[in-house]
Amino acid sequence: MFTLFTLLLVILTVFYILKTAEVNNGRKIAEKKYAETKVEKFKSPQALTKLSILPLIDSESAGENLKTENGVSYLVQADDKQILLDIGFNKGKEHPSPLLHNISELGKSFDEIDTLVFSHLHLDHVGGMAEQKAGKFSLSQGKVETPDIPVYAPAKLSPSAFNPQFKNITISQNPTEIAPGIYTIGTIPRQLFLMGYIEEQALAFNLAGKGIVIVIGCGHQTIQKIIERTKALFDEPIYAIFGGLHFPLNGTTFFSKIQYLLGSDHPPHQGLSKKDLFDAIESIQAENVQMVGISPHDSTDWSIAQFKKAFGEKYIKMKVGKEILL
Ligand SMILES: [Zn+2]
Ligand SMILES: [Zn+2]
Image 1 (cartoon, helix red, strand yellow):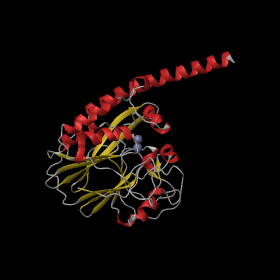
Image 2 (cartoon, helix red, strand yellow):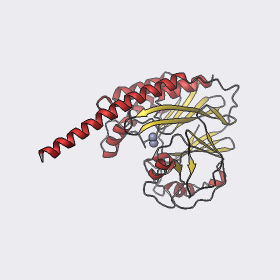
Image 3 (cartoon, protein in one colour):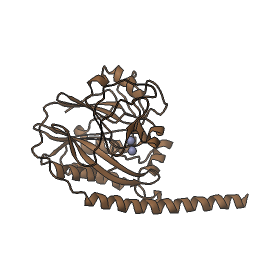
Image 4 (tube, protein in one colour):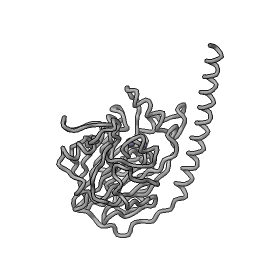
């Protein structure tokens, strides 16, 4: 018995030491890649006159008819274009998926969506765990007919057998204009403990008379780097920031505690701290951002309460089915 316990302890210790070495090394590689990536300003970016964000998947909703889950899908209406950022988790492997259910409940349709963008290739953004492992994405766990619209992915990605129609997939590691006034800021790398290396991109919209609106998936990049990259791409001020920033702090549920282990680029004994959260808030305040909304899918109630306190009337709740007008 004692021997078995000792063996287990040795295995766990070796695992922890190896994972710590991996995350420390990976963090240096990611930092180096980020520092070496040079980007150029977008020349005279077109200004949009109309912009709204409708969360289709997140962990809170505005109506009982809408499904919630720990994932993200946001539909952005920018003038006459509809951009879908991420497609949720579908943890229960349902068909129709929570995404399809909510799209239909909200009177929306895939026929109207112009572009599909993936922030990063984690399970809660590509429609499932099997999808993440296979480097694929699924809108649902059954056949879904949609037009073959352009897809922007942060790394190699292909459609699953449930939606093979997507043929036009661009890997947008560099900042790219998706349509006039609509941009991806390009990928920013991060090495996460257990979850490994990840490249994540965020969307930027240039709203006339106001400035840049940033829409984020999980926020593994860190908001500081997202802001730095955005400022390197645009002369316009940052007007609003919406989406996940990944602050599973002071959590009460098992899931949020696991998230804490998965989501940091340091080993758990030096992991995510309250200081990281307050530094993030400060970096947003330094830009005089006028609207802020944090996704509850990867941040705890406690963390979101800190944002609400810091931004007061400028804070906007993010809920499935509640359209945010900018
Ligand atoms: Zn996420
Ligand atoms: Zn993620």
